[in-house]
Image (cartoon, rainbow, N blue to C red; front, side, top):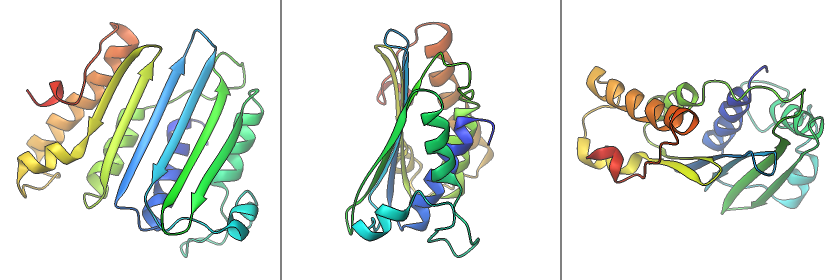
Amino acid sequence: MRELSLHILDIAENSISAGASKVEILVKEDTLNDELWISVKDNGKGMDEEFLAIVMNPFVTSRTTRKVGLGIPLLKQAAEACNGGMTIDSQPGKGTELTTKFQDSHIDRMPLGNLADTFLSLLIGTPGVNWVLHYQVNDQTFHFDDSEVKRVLDGMPLTDYRVIEYLTNTIQNGINGLNENGFKQGVNHAYN
């Protein structure tokens, strides 16, 4: 994978496979400490200690669509190559949180990629999941929780072109605004 957003997509798909009804994605760029943090947390079925001990093996996967699980080992390797690392906290029946840390300025760090499109793909592709995005650059934050949007839509599908346009603009502006204008927007501002 050439972009970190594709790793986020892969890990979030693991959450979906684990039966998660809520997935939170955190991307935190701390330029002052030269760190990039990525975390995917879910309330899925979780992993027992035995499976957790072997989950870094590329030849282990719980998915039925393929026989190897390269996503987690490759992400771990990418983080370690950039003076970082990975932790996985999981409990059966409670969910999993995977966190990676990268040296932000490391020459080998992959670009973040198109986080907005990645998140939109997850949101629109799996509307039965509550998707939450926290994107932070230093002390400025963009937060998006789709539960309020779904409540306001009252059954209108996320695939309606007007909804897609609204979601695209809201998420792209929130993410891009932090990088370009020091934009700060909370979830309540996103719907006014």
